[in-house]
Length: 396
Image (cartoon, rainbow, N blue to C red; front, side, top):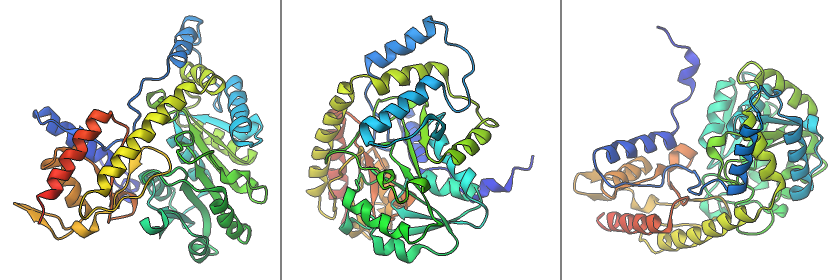
């Protein structure tokens, strides 16, 4: 069987690869602390689970409209106004099977072969792969720990060309946890105003996991609002990863195009998950705030532990549930048969010697770092930091 050539344009995500390697070691009896995958370790809040049970008992078992049920579209519109002061009508919103599909819909409906797409690094691994699937040209702009991994306006200005079609970023960011302030977004907006041919995808899936104050969306700026696509979903803020509900808000013509595309892939998302999502969005956010408080405690502990390790430099993430420490000073060191030449070697060393699963930073566009997920219990995080510290201490 001959497979399509498009499969050669991208590779398996390192996040999934490292999780597989960790599971293989676990299957052989090795005690692995898995910090590779970014998935909440909490149960979905009880009132959301009860809403799903009620939906089943009430007979919700039919196909849904491709763009989402009217009730969920209204709930999302209400949420965007309540939490973000963004006014989106229901024909400017589409529900998909996870935020990843929302992103794929937008990219495939906007990017033609040869179009340039600017992505600041570090970035979530899927952004580049989706652009490549669409035939677009990925243009990475490197951001560094010294600027909290945030893109500066002058960097954006220098990167834009007449071929630039799209800009994709996230705030709070996966993998760095960096959060753009309103003032920082305003600086980028001034650049976009000078380049009206560039559209913006703003991935805001970690919106609620924010430790520095209220979430700021780039869609709030009226001058570019008709070029902004907001991506969000239920997975992170409500611990609903397996429920697979994401949504997009943007120009009505793009939403209509995404509806046309999605109709040929998945049609409408799961009806039970949609009914539960209505309750999640419109109910008390107390359980979400409790989870965020726990994430902050974990952030504080892991960041503090990393900052005490020789050769490691770690910023303090403003949101999400990751740490992205800079480990380049450790390159060239070794222990036994292990030689640390790069970030991949470091991740494999920590897995095989420290028995902690991480992800190499090059997967996210920064080969000088590694990513650790803090979506784990404090007991496991303490054990992981102890193991990492011991493993790094063996290097010379």
